[in-house]
Image (tube, rainbow, N blue to C red):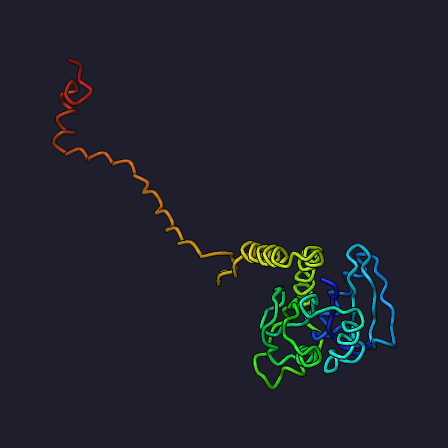
Length: 248
C-alpha cells in the first residue's frame, strides 16, 4: 500500500462532523506514528510520509465533492496505481462501531468516492469504511453527515477506528487479506461480548420465572382434653381408687 487517504471537509466548522470520520482515522494514525502532516499547495492537501512503510498519508483540503483531484495529482506524480491506494471514509450503511475493508465496488451515493472514481478512472482502490449510522430517510442524509455524532456514537466510532488502526500495518505491508480477516474477526468478537439488551425488569437476558412463595406452615394447636362426664366425676368422688390415676 503506497497511499492512505482520509476523506472529510477542511476547516473547524466541519472537524467534528460525521463526514470527517476518514480524517479522524488518518489524523490518529499520523499522531500515533509521529508522522507530520504538512499543507502542500501543489497537491491541495495535507501530506506526510510514514517512514517505516514509505506510504504517503493524505488529507484533501479541497472539500469532499472534490476529493479526487488531490489524490489523482499525488498518485500520478508518484506513479501509484489505484490498487495501491486505501481510502478511509464514513459509511452510512454501517452502524457506529463497525469498520470494514474491501476493494472496489460501488460508491453508494458518497460524493467523495464518486469524485475519486471519476478522477482515477477506476473503482479498484481499497476502501476502509467507518460506520456512522443512517438518519432513517434519504432526505436527511446531507444534514446528518454534516452534524456531530452523539457522545455515545462518537465513542463507538472511535473504538472502530482503533480496531482499524491495529490492522493498518498489515495493509501497509501489502497483506490486505490478513488485515481484512483480523479486523472483521475482532469486530465479530466485540459484538459477541456486548451485553444483550435488558428486559422489561431492567435485568440482562431473559427474565426467569418467578418462584411461588412458600405457603406458611400450619401451626398445630394442642388438643383440648375431653370434658369429664358428670357420672364419672361422681363415681370418682365416692370411689377415689377409680380413674386413670388408680394404681394396679
